Length: 444
Image 1 (cartoon, rainbow, N blue to C red):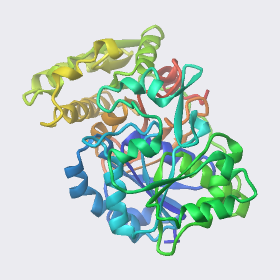
Image 2 (image 1 turned 90 degrees about the horizontal axis):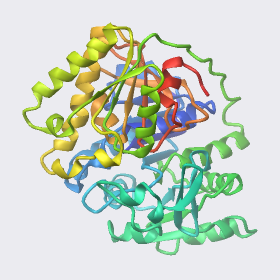
Image 3 (image 1 turned 135 degrees about the vertical axis):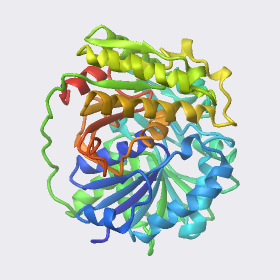
């Protein structure tokens, strides 16, 4: 197997496919695994230049991270890639108790060594920007500082109440975070300033990205500052978009591939655990455009004894599909119907929702012979897809109008699952017609 350019661990599944899209759509073939692969499975994808491992750490506790992340990072290190990336959500929503990014970086430094860890969050392709260390994100055509964002500032589990990434991280780790800001990156002294940031005692170095020029500049610095034995880095898919600039400049890969639209399917199943207003609009649009909706009781789905709710949902979903219609099954229709306060985090109830949505989708796929499906919700996708017999994902179709939520091809030992197509959509991602677009198999 050739030495990969990059390996990565995604802290949730939608974030993992986001990275795969950023790389594969630009010609860096990428395989995303759902668990650490055996040698034979890895060999099937030996032609790839990048490998990912989809995880769930965004919704997990520090104790969980301490138990599970070391083995994942050791596997990344064993691949010998030039850069090993801990991929986090571009909105950086996290807390000391849930999805602690500072803790993950500490664990990464234990595995990869104590070299300063580059941190890149800005990704103009998905309308995320960092300027002088502060994070901004777009919502419905307007750009907000993240602590004033209409959705992320009110996230039900990890609300973002601080836009300065260095201050936000200081709540999660004692590691020192430095900054190479947007003005420094544009200056003639960019190399010297970056070198200083990486040597003045910083453990983490945030690099601003606010547009194409700063993204290209950051890609150059990332590749220039990589260390022998694999550089551990952290950030959003903006890190990959930055590196692609540099790799293309250096001629490390050829032209971007051409992807053909797969065309429509007669029926599509969507399962959603998202409470986002973006997903709410997508569900409402779908219901007005050929889909039938099935509302699910989130509390019943989260209960330890939730088998009855699952069986009822399977029956209702199969009935819609048997009638020749596409179906959306959802546990919430926007934030106004969020019942998160009635669902405990500590006993795994939130994870059970995702797992049961995965079991529901598996029964719909097999029972109705579906070849395409959608899972909506970042945390939901991570726990739901684990219930299907999926070994790996590759990119089937990037979606330029909804970047970060591509259509993927499933690779599985289960012949009823192998070759099917699945789209995994984060709560904030996608235009209103997203579900219809996936049903119709069109890129825009």
